[in-house]
Amino acid sequence: MQSTFTDEIGAIDQAIADRVGQQKHRVWFKNSTRLTIADTYLKVGVPNHFIGSWIENHFLDDISLAVRSVTGSDKKIAFAIEPDLAGRQKRPQLDSQADLVQRAHNKTTRSRMKPGTYQRRQTLLKMSLDSFVVGPRNQLAYNAAMSVVGEEKSPFNPLFFHGGYGIGKTHLLQGICNEVAKTRPQAKWLYVSAEDFVNQYVLALKTRKLDAFRRRFRQMDLLAIDDIHFLASKKAMQEEFLHTFNTIDLAGKQVVLVSDAHPKMIGKLCERLVNRFVSGMVVKIEAPDFKTRCRICAQRAMAMKKQIPDTVIAYIAENMNSNVRELEGALLKLIAFAALTKEKITPAMARRVLAEHISRTDPIVHTSDIESAVTTFFGVTTADIHSSRRDRTTSTARSFSMFLARRYTKMSYPEIGRVIGGKNHATVILACRKVKDLVERNAEVKWIGPNGNRIARAKDIMDQLISSLS
Image (cartoon, rainbow, N blue to C red):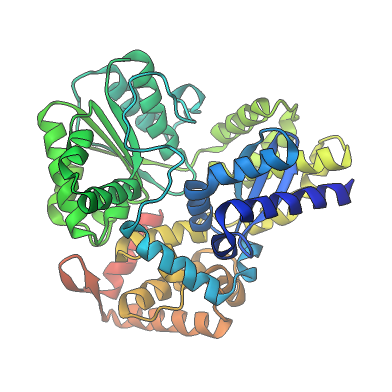
């Protein structure tokens, strides 16, 4: 049976390569993913949240079609972070990923959400408010979402959700769109990522259809944009979005935005846009508490049509305390193991199967959280940090990431190097020493900001980054 599963995984991988092309497969899949099949699910293991998000946003349809062509049936695609995959990535591959991200806003990409067409009928997105598990740490965000859905005239504009990776921001955003589609079927609404907004704007410029682009976005009753921090450092796009926002706001319509960081923590974002963002309602979504994590696990298990003992759910929830995707990854791994071995799921089996998974995800602060805070502050991308680029801004951001990873996680220097772009341990040691020296001397740190060179004291930078992580 194991051989059969291995052959099937190999066939799926080849089918993905045939669909996306050998070059994209080599850059994004070859050393960056691990595929596992479990009943009605295909688990895609990735080294970090950046790779997972990129593959999910750009290749989800291709993966789904590849699975269907090999297995003859549709399977749900789930992404899970597996840090050991970081060591498999080669530097040329990381550089290629960084270059592709750098050029992404200059070309159009096929979006699985088919952006650019507003919905008048119930063409619902993946996630709904009904399936959103509410707890003490996301209650305010959920209430804000419900208030937006219930009012045709915006109660506050914009509604801005921010927080770490995998805690439900996109879930709420899509849920708002779905609820508006159901309760107000005549309302025009549009859900896109900030990257899609940029790509469509560039395409409109090239094809001389800017008026059509502006009508499409500015006549919405609800405009929902994910990953708005993508506009950082893109001055022309920030100006265009500011005018789009002002037009919708003056019409009394609603804008809902999602970001990894608070507006004031997004590097290279113009002051006018920051002021507009904070003039509405800014809500931080925290990682779920223990009881909420238990309810999430129970709900996901029910969706997978699996009976998981309460003791096992409690064990997973107790040890996976960072984000929902880690919970789902652990649950999926457990179900996959049980399906392959025909073994009953018990607490003892869960401890044995998830031992390595838990040891890898034990720290309260994760490298994905650190990279999110650092990249938004300095205005770079995760791909930049993972690449071999050595300009001042990228090098500074990379050094702060390594220092914070050493401080807040249990990872060794070699492990940090593998996770942050496959760097060797000596590079990590030197980066940590450099940042430690800067903080001890409270030296001036220089980097390229939205309006040119920026200077700040090392302690002030560190305080802001730590505040973001906390």
